[in-house]
Length: 87
Image 1 (spheres, rainbow, N blue to C red):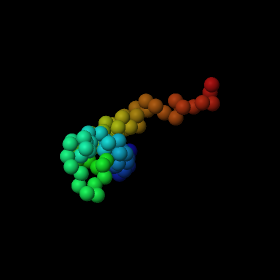
Image 2: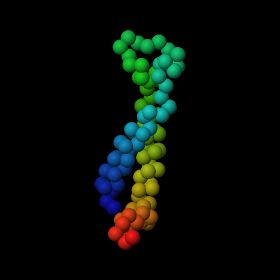
Image 3: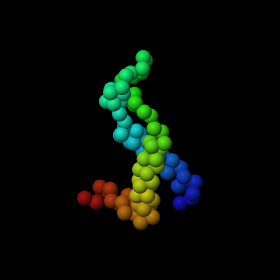
């Protein structure tokens, strides 16, 4: 597999993982017991930590990409696995 393909697929895994990671470990201002700023949504996080989200996203994306690449190299699950014509 070319390195450009690896980079593109890893980027897709990273973006997808960001949507999985963002809802976890988020506390709203109401849950913390703070005061809402006028105009602030009640569901907005009390403290936004993009570095923490990026770290968790990178970890999840690396694990998922590792599984994907392992399957690409060793063919654990192939097209023949889902061949329903030979029943």
